[in-house]
Image (cartoon, rainbow, N blue to C red; front, side):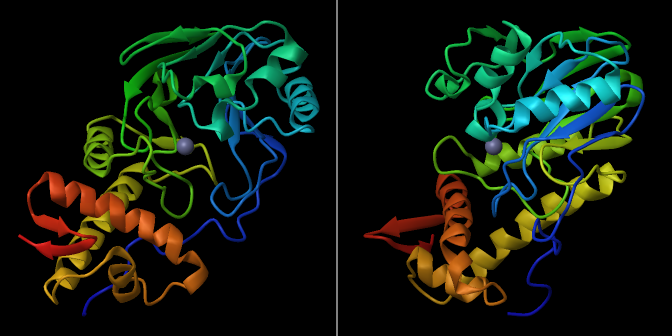
Length: 292
Ligand SMILES: [Zn+2]
């Protein structure tokens, strides 16, 4: 196979972020303290609003030290002890797993998200205030508009900060590496549509849920789209060599990736195969895939 093997070449490995920091007069962040292979240094949780009662966007995974760190960050960054409410990008546990802990520390805050009934239990017993696309959410000096962006998760919302032309992208676009399209609730075709939708928004900054702030959003979004398009072409090219099972496809495409990552790569390949199957570009018989 010729040409580049991948478009996105950076990764979460080795990325370091401080425990908390202020990014602008309206946006500060506190690190969720839940580092893993997939979350990088952990989930970014954001304090949004210029006043003394910012809202909290995402809550991390519920790691014990997080709530105290949040209180410390809030005091230092916003001279505050209070939060206005919680908004969440989606129902994965590293985003709403900290809801219970934050409400224990800061009182019974309202929790706003697009519902995903099968998964919202990760927020503990907190009642969810349902929001959909194009909802407006206010904090002092800050206006957020929701943008429905399924694909990584069926309930995924991005939040557009009007005053800064900035977008909180959750797990749709990350500060380094690429995101996972999980078999449970993920959909690559929807994911690509969501990325293309972002190109229609006037953007200066992306605040991702993992990794550093993105200052060249359009370039990053185009890179993300190109990355998946290349992968799709690689899957199709590989299948020209005859019926193959998923792991055989992985081994042919991910020659630059160590074998311990091949299971994760397989989930990416499966997301492509599912998309291609829905588009009637491939067929599957007893675990073997062929071009149609
Ligand atoms: Zn997620």
